[in-house]
Length: 361
Picture 1 (tube, rainbow, N blue to C red):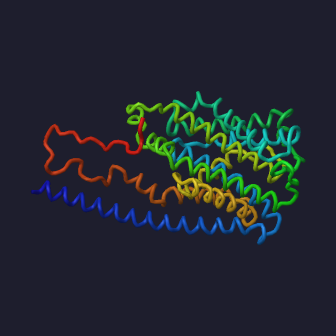
Picture 2 (cartoon, rainbow, N blue to C red):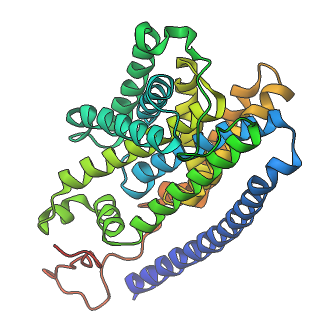
Picture 3 (cartoon, one colour):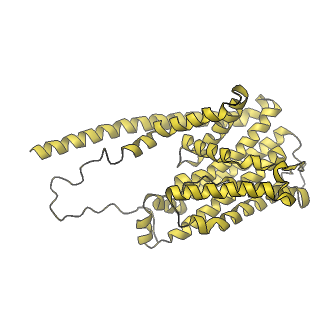
């Protein structure tokens, strides 16, 4: 009787905590949806409501938001934490700048070449990232990102070194159309491309690919045991995320017509990860909005609090990581679990976990 009463108390306590967490998560989800809607409306209306300087900053912010989408694809959807998406971002930016200055000024050409450069860099890094997981993978991707910045600063014949590449020709959105000569035109082009690419990512993740990536995130060993080629999935998502980040690099060049290694430092990687956490690690749209919000806040803080912006953003990261419901549930794992066996369980019974649903070989 006593054991049964203790078990009932544990179930009641666990259920109460779950109920509180569910209410908090619904409130946070509602807040995120509201903020996301407000941000999207503001982004659409921005070219007609703010000055040209702010429009130019927002175009650059949108490019970083697309990089945040690639971070969310790896970190939240596939369960592969990363701090190195600035590497394919830089590869795409420099590839787009070189093509724009020597071969073609057409935007789709820049995007394809930049996406190819980002994907190629991801392929080169695959031997390092494929066998790694967790914190080890995080450190490896950070090292890859930092090596890319060092290479960009020293390969002066292509990248211009630490001085960067300036005076890049204006982009033409399509063949036969005039070049994007104003900040508003460049912003609208960037907004359309980001919306299309983010929409394509969402569309792909709604199908079998998304199911496989989430299944690998939740239980990689079971997915491998069921006959799926997990290494191929991991390689594919790394290359796809590299291509997305590379395309974002092309948009950065279009927006500011200048690129330098300072655009791809560790502070950018940390900001992107913070934006993904704020927007929701498993949400592509939330990552885009979160990345835009965090970068915009950074730019505003640099003007409002000179020299203090990194400190404020660091404190914000700590607060977000500890107060979001997902982080709280992770810290409670193992402390608030239901009884491991039902009342009628007998010695020797094995409770099998539910099979991965929606995934077939």
